[in-house]
Length: 187
Image (tube, rainbow, N blue to C red; front, side, top):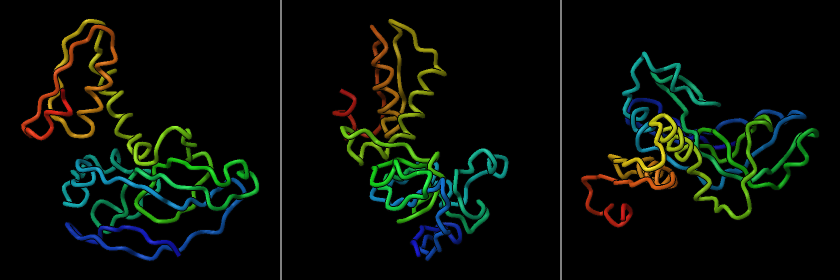
């Protein structure tokens, strides 16, 4: 049995025992070592504030239940491949990232996991979805060489967006936040 974080009702969380399915040839069992809770998206889920119009768009891979509760949600998991099906033996023992809800062990198709480079610490690897969002923000903003950019909000995604934007040559980036404790990060 595995343990999974579920939100049975609005603003309530509990750990539930979850059976693991039998391992198929193309699947891996992950033993999670690191995870991250999104202060934005997961706060909406926890508070029961996901608009019905966004239910389909906000569904995560491997999510359990529905946004109307109970729901098992999350998408930042780093772990080690503990067991492999016959077609996934090449992943045995690898440290991997997976878009999966908060759970201590889980089984997924091998195609859902990404091997983490040795030089990337697990606490940083768990931020991969946040970095992906930051890259998309910079692409969508069409930041060009020499642009002046203001990023409003110095949370994880804001700091990453400012960092990505600062990598565009000759770009001047200003990170704005009302929290004075974030000034050193912005500097």
